[in-house]
Image (tube, rainbow, N blue to C red; front, side):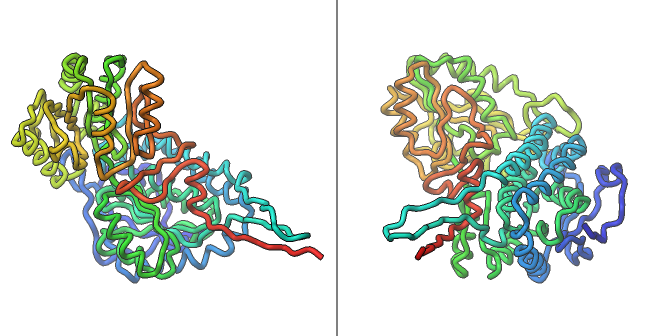
Length: 494
């Protein structure tokens, strides 16, 4: 691929020094933007890099490049498109450690989880590439003599992928890989909180033979670059992962051009623990759900309902695990369970949620404090009991290392409380009774239910929410087909 990016050594590319990055448009790195965004390490507050604050004109150039490249990209056999994806995943594997280092510095993710994210991203790209020979249409039965009816699946066109900051590297693949293998082209806008990994991803793409314009990357904030991208008349699908509020605004803006949207939004996932559950297993999985990525995961358990006979025993086990949690600066210490929250606003939100819960009558068992205020955005792992359905902490997404617990009399009450929410992404239940597990699977109104295991989806599943948790979904065959549209052909024989 042609590029005006000067050759750089690996050590220069993955330097720990703060440096400026450039948009990647039409197979070339653009001239530096007039305005730049400082990217901060949330564990220290130090500037780790600068990325463009793209103008509407720069966004337009990226969309035009994607549109120009799409027809010839679609004409390539799918297996050849898959080959380009595999070349990208190979690059990621070659630089897996350095890429994880970037995620640690700019997102505050612990090193082991950052490495999992990089490796899973490469695996995900390869998984989607495998669909190249499995993209299927249908032969339909006609009502007319000598007529053949075909249903084909075709690419939508230009995709705009707008990324969150909590799993920033994986979400590049979740949006790019299915889009490209089905014949679309894409413009990615990473979160301004965690964009550097995406710009380095673009540098690695530039070293492959991917045709110019198939993959494009622009930096910027939501009100600027994000709005320009969503409102662009040549964008055919907007796929976004983030908050309900932002998703609602995107849907409103996309309506101006009747642009399709795919939205993965927030969650307030319930976990149910019945009296016959393996309490050690439940405690370990639920604790992991609250500290993974410092609780900044939309599909992990955010509220817990425990049958009264085992409530105190489970709380005792959770208290030990919460108090044993190792937290700190992941760029300095490898052996941690969690790092900082992403920014000061997130820290303030979590602190306010805990404070309000106590004002409403809940009790903190352990944690509950901001810590390390002079260096990073850290909040103690916090376990809260005595929560009720009316409390805001049981209704609004906290997105931090906080677990509110409510005692329930039975499964009936647990399911009713679990479903009493505006969200509908994931849910979980812990029980040794198969009938209870099956009943919960039937009656919980969520896109996913995890039984006796942690909340973490598989790439071959379908990660989709209900109600305000989103529209459409991702992963597996059904996620792949989100990037296609149907074309029915009627062939009348003689």
